[in-house]
Amino acid sequence: MSTPSPRRRSFLKTTLAAAGAAALHRRASAAPDAGAAPKAPRIRFSVIGVDHPHIHRQVEAVIRGGGAFVAFYAKDSKQAAEFGKRYPQAKLAGSEKEILESDVQLIATSGIPAERAPLGIQAMKHGKDFLSDKPGMTSLQQLAEVKRVQAQTKRIYSIMYSERLENAATVRAGDLVRAGAIGQVIQTVGLGPHRLHPPTRPDWFWDPARAGGILSDIGSHQFDQFLYFTNSTTAEVVSARASNVAHPDHAAFQDFGDATVQGNGGTGYLRVDWFSPAGLPTWGDTRLTILGTEGYVEVRKNIDVAGRAGASHLFLVDANGPRYIDCRDVVLPFGGQLVDDVLNRTETAMSQAHCFLAAQLGIEAQDAARRSPMRRPTI
Image 1 (cartoon, rainbow, N blue to C red):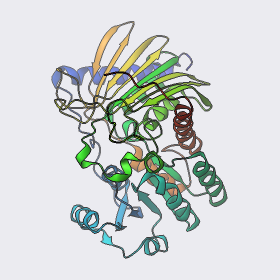
Image 2 (cartoon, rainbow, N blue to C red; image 1 turned 120 degrees about the horizontal axis):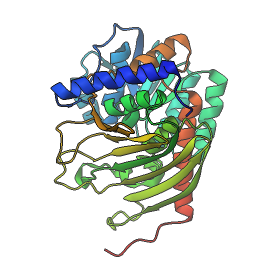
Image 3 (tube, rainbow, N blue to C red; image 1 turned 45 degrees about the horizontal axis):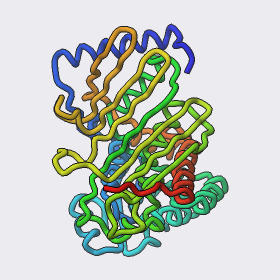
Image 4 (tube, one colour; image 1 turned 45 degrees about the vertical axis):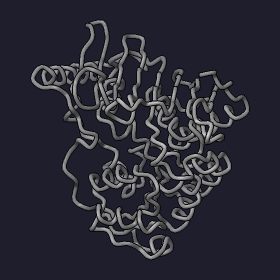
């Protein structure tokens, strides 16, 4: 990114001053759903497929943005009962077809990953916009067909990369980087550890053909952040590795992966794994470091280990020294922007090109890791 203009310098000064004052008077403890009160309903939306609990973040974001949640469908009766208790305002539909042929404008899903793209294609062909959990597709063939139908129908195919879109510190980091706080971005480093807890995982989770693999799945957050913060519109996977280090009972499963990427706006490195220890009081100590020519930003998304309480911790280091930036009052914009896009046929929440490129990088990294598997270390 280029040197900030006087206008950007003014914005940056105001942003940092406000954040610094708040930090002096209170500890940051941003809740993941921090933000403004829900807007009045502006669109109607439904859900098909609730196989992953990420669906709650999707539903709540759209409701905050002005969506009226009217119906859902889940094949599993237990899932349907539990989901219906949480959202009594939405009726249980009798089939996917009932929702596809209804008058809703948007359909969301967190179904089994390999089933998301086919559902999204049907939604777009029925004139609906579509919001998928990540990964939004699990193969380059699925991606190609989604892109073809999206271009034909002009509907929105969006993927919620929640580690950026639904994390207050990451949203604020985006404001700072866009304002020139660290100069031109050079590199992003994304770390995405997750807790496994095998008894809670369904059968499809262990099968890469259905779940997508570690780099395509949880790695997708990191590819999204790399593109966003480096402002890259083209990119390629330089190297990628994945391995099953400690779960021999599930031979096809991968519990560790990393990759390096190069874009027209910078470089990126990511590491993802399923090794969050039992003593960590959250599912993962996920972190993002953004290096610039005049400083760097670090985001500790879920926990500041042995430090401040709560989540969404943001640190800025530049010529003036290190600073902690309070993100508790950050409004999460994605839901409102997506609803705006549904109504106005715009791309304010995320461009379609960015959405597809982030997914493509994850799939290509996964394919590269399959071709050159990482040698399993001796433990």
